[in-house]
Amino acid sequence: MNCLKCGKSFEEKEIEDPSSLKYPSCKDCWKEWTTYGVMVINEMHLDMSLPEHRKALKKYERGFFGLDKVEELKKNPEDPETP
Image (cartoon, rainbow, N blue to C red; front, top):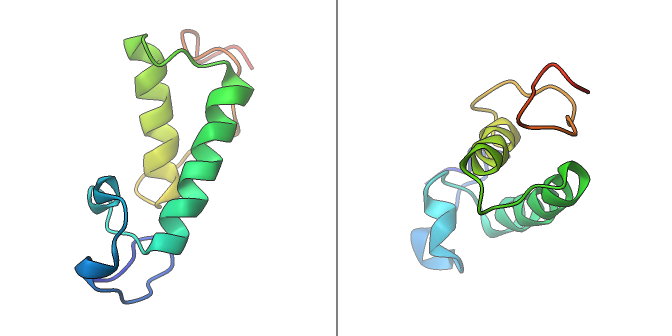
C-alpha cells in the first residue's frame, strides 16, 4: 500500500490504528493527522456530538490527505461565511 499523504510504501501489518485504513496512510502520517485533528477540534471549538461539527472535522481530514481543498480554519462550522 502507498500512503495518500507522503506516498511512502507500507505494509498493512505495520498499521497500529485500523482507522487509518479509511485513508491509506503510514503510521507517521496518521499520527500527524491525529495531532492535527485535535488542533482542529480545539481551534474550532467543535462538539463531536453535533453532526455539523463532525462534518466539519471530516472536511479537514479529507483535506489533510489531499482529497479535498480546505480553506483556513473557520471558527463557526454552522455558518461557513463567518471567519
